[in-house]
View 1: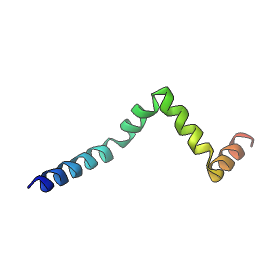
View 2 (view 1 turned 45 degrees about the vertical axis):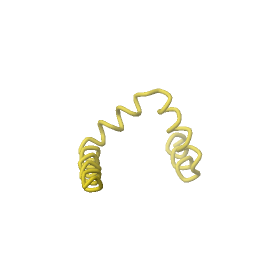
View 3 (view 1 turned 60 degrees about the vertical axis):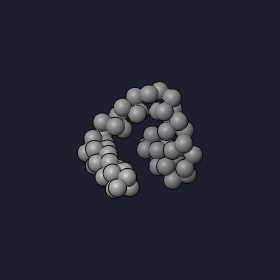
Length: 58
């Protein structure tokens, strides 16, 4: 019974996060430390870095 309740809660939480995903992302990226971490980690990926630099220096 406990596993069923946890599974049901996880599904409901997943649906809520999916439904409000843009609000969740905006709320997380409004935190300065998380914003810096996200930019720093995404720029360490070569494909993303090359795409961003090519767009900026166009």
